[in-house]
Length: 364
Image 1 (cartoon, helix red, strand yellow):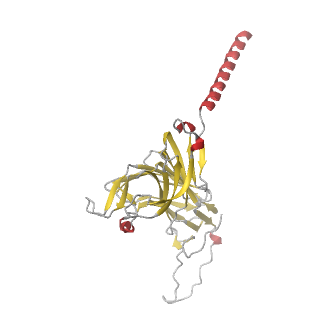
Image 2 (cartoon, rainbow, N blue to C red):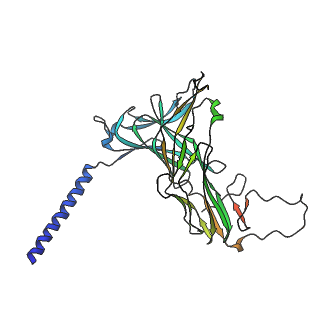
Image 3 (cartoon, helix red, strand yellow):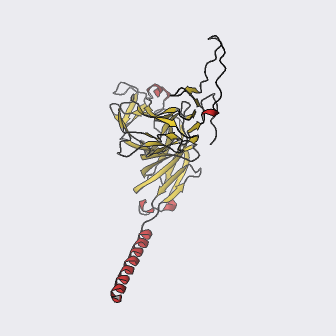
């Protein structure tokens, strides 16, 4: 009996040793990706050594930041743009590499976040980088744009974008028991009225639809401070026809506990759309316009988080300022309510901070 036990023990030990050898061999054979960073630290290239063709090594790869004249190849355009050149120029990879560019957080005065674009240029051909993802840094001041490339050339990002995401309200203070209606909207701005400035412009391709969260995954805003109920705003899948359509998701959240909380994206926001490139010309085109229009292949963008700097505060009703004394005034003497005061669902007042000319938001 002991001999049988020893036999099985030896067999089990041998299996464990073989598994260990297999994992060790795998780690040796699988080459870890290498990260190359530009001198200003704002562009990084993540590439596997086996993505390089024969005769090229990682020591030959670099990123140069340069000013490029007429990146979009527009007639008589002398505009200089800052771009990053991946070297050796024109190198074709055997498998995709990931390029990442840092960009300032592009939130406009009206609270909208402009979804930036990242372009890749080879010769006279300009295209959008494949499978773009957008992440916000912990400081909330920068966003990171990443995507896949299969060859080396110029890369450039445009902070303007064609889609705009807005979370309302941006920041509020309201008493426990009050309700705040929270909404997320995504819209598109056609740039037709800006074609006169001589720059290449981008818009949704005509007669196409754009889709939000059409990947069969769950997408929602999650409340991280456990002060509001319910703790999420669902972001359902939706297909929108044309550039005039607007995506909208909303939920009423109730203050339950005193303190601060924020809303962050879970599952991100996924956009699928077809881009139209509009290029001004000096000669009338077959479309009857002084512009050429090129339809680009459909693109896929994932926005992972752009809302974590938003601040919500629930307070005890005893902390609210007392109501004004009931004196009698004429309509001309009655002051208008401040622009930062918004009526709540239950009749209270929601204080909105961070508006231009209004009160600053408190620090967390």
